[in-house]
Image (tube, rainbow, N blue to C red; front, side, top):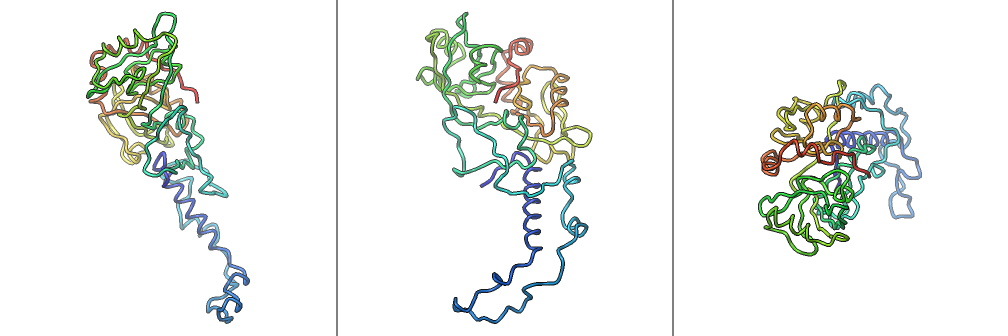
Length: 316
C-alpha cells in the first residue's frame, strides 16, 4: 500500500507509470522469447501474430496526445520524468525517537515523485505515534511549556522559544500521556504544572502522542504563486475552486498551525502570508479544527502566545 502527500503526486505517479508501461509495449519482443520451444512440450508452429512487426513506435506527437503533457498537468509547472522508476520515489523518514506509528499495512511508504525534495514535507511529518522525551530544567527551573486539558486529555498549547521543551522537539498540540511514569489522563492544567515544578530538575521524562487532533495537507502553487485558500486570524475562511488546496482536501473552519513545519500560532495573517509566499512549492500546512483550537486557547492571550511561542524553523 502506498501513500501520497498530495493528489498531484498520486496523479503524476499514475501518469508516469502509464507512460513507462506504454513505452515498454512499443518495443517488439525477440524471436527467442516469442513462444516456447518444442522441448517444453508446446507446438513449434509460430503464433498467428507477427514476431517482428514492421510498425514503428508511436511518434512523440501521437504519444503526447494519449496523455497530458506534464508541463500542463493539473495546472502545475512540471518537468518530464525521464527513466521514471516507481520504487525509487521519495520516502519521507519517520521522526526520531518514534516508538509506534499506526499503519494499515506494516510496509506502507510515502511516494512523492514531485514533492519528495521538499524540506517542508519532511519537517511537517505527522505520525500520531508515541515517543518518549527526556527533559532537563533550565537555570530558572522551567521546561518551557503550557498545557490545557481537552476531553480528559492533556495537550501542549505553548512551547516557549529557547527552552528545554523547544530543544526536545515538543510541539503545539502534542498530547502528554505520562510524566515520570505517572499517567496524567484527567489531570487539570494546575495539576500538570505542579508535577513539572516538583520534578527532578536534572531528568524528567514524558511520553507524548504526536499531535492527535492535527493533520497535514500538501498543496502546490499555481503559476501565480498562490496555494488556493484564504484565511483570517489564522482560520481558513475560503477555498479557491479547482485549486490545489481544493483538490487536496483543505477545509474551512480550520486553523493554520504550521507552514512547512514552522509554527505560526499567534502570528499575524501578514506574517503567515509572507512565510507561504517565500516558501518554494509545494507547501505543507498543518491544520486543526477551529472549535478544538479555540477551546485550547480560550484562556490564553494571543499577545502572550505571539511573544513567547517558538516560531523557529525545526531542524531535520
